[in-house]
Image 1 (cartoon, rainbow, N blue to C red):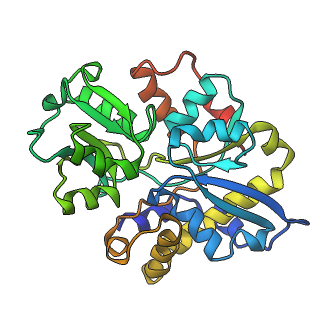
Image 2: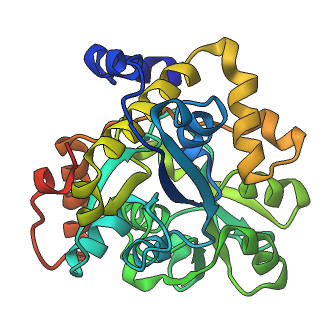
Image 3: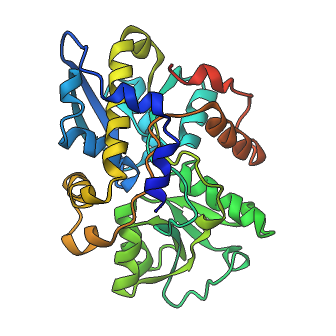
Length: 314
């Protein structure tokens, strides 16, 4: 299983750090922003299994409808730490926000088919070429699904500039397809499964399987000034996620992992039982972030060339 394989990538030394006793002298309050995807599972597990608490962190998960709004919420102090996609994070930094990464969320994997291109019933969309001239909803312009879908279109020989992209939050996808407001959406489970089961749409492509494995799908960012003033809290947050990752990859804990996800994403039991969970990747590397820089530069999304080493809190 990919989740079990992902554990080896965390590194023995980092995992060992997760077992150290809590060192925080006082409780640090953290408001954490998440969107409705399973890539945040390690945060949910760390909260429910008490990994944050034993390290002196009081983490309050807060639902954010659109991933692209997370950097602004960090800047305004509405969030202490938030989970933007790597592309949203890099665009925010490129635009002048002084943010750093304190940890990571989920990772890409070839066997993950939990997101893809979902076309409206009767639209006739089957290939990348069929998307030309169509209106396609994405849950955040410049976010993970938007950027990776455009990369797939380009890989298939299609000019993504000839596709009309509109921003639409996950919960709106089914209604937009039914009403004919969009021809397709780039969506993810559990919303994708609900759409197909209702007959409102069908999966035209699990395009995600073309992505390289082991790259971050979600990163956990904070303002640089907060991270520099709270280095112990940054380490404690990351170590909590490392411990949660170790918990997640053990098959015997699957039911508890899914229960933690269901609590925060509010999934019905039948959907929760089937939803795919991305491999956990709590430690972000320079290589992983550099992959996203390259992908975004290829789409003319960055003005500068960010120093990835400076963007990761150590």
